Amino acid sequence: MTLRSVRRQAKQPLAIFAAPTTIWDALLQPAFIKVQQQKSELSWRTDHLNREALTRQLLEHQLDLAILFDPPKTDDISIEKLCNVKLVAVTSGSNEGLAGLATQAYCYVDWGNTFETLHSRFFNEQAPIKLRSSSATLALSWLLENVGSAYLPESMVSGYLKQGRLQQLTSVPGIERELYAAYLTDNQYNQELQTVIRLLQQQFAAEQSQAVS
Image (tube, rainbow, N blue to C red):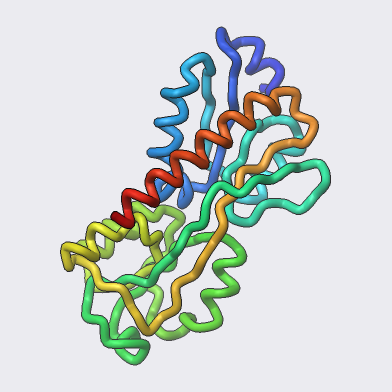
């Protein structure tokens, strides 16, 4: 079904919105719910897609707005930064430094191509990979039930760090990522998309402020 036919079937203006699973369940879901409530005049369709599918569907006019870490670089697609995301290495075991990681299981969470490159510089082969996942929520649940480590957003684990249920691996560098919104430069609904992007930026800023306090 084409985007045009989907829009014809919608009884209200329709926004089609997608992101990778890791971004949805660790970062985007609460902000999206708030924006959806604020933009009640819109109908929404959401999806979980990897970076390649996001880019393809944007270029094929099957998608209005993509949220991702590694946006495509083409004149046909405009991008806007939503927020900074700090990924920190945390453990449910003891914080024994890099040497101690060899005795812990490790969950590799897929945070995109740039993360994979940075991660390989100082974390590869330090700990045996027990689980690979595209779900940060699953990774967090796994950590809370097993002794192991993973890279997760600081905002997602701050409460568990305060409670002592997780510890930050201070010997392992954090990884800073920038989260972007991407959309077709010639999308006829760009004015509406700009409003949605502004609201997302506000929600992310508010959530990060709460996590720090």
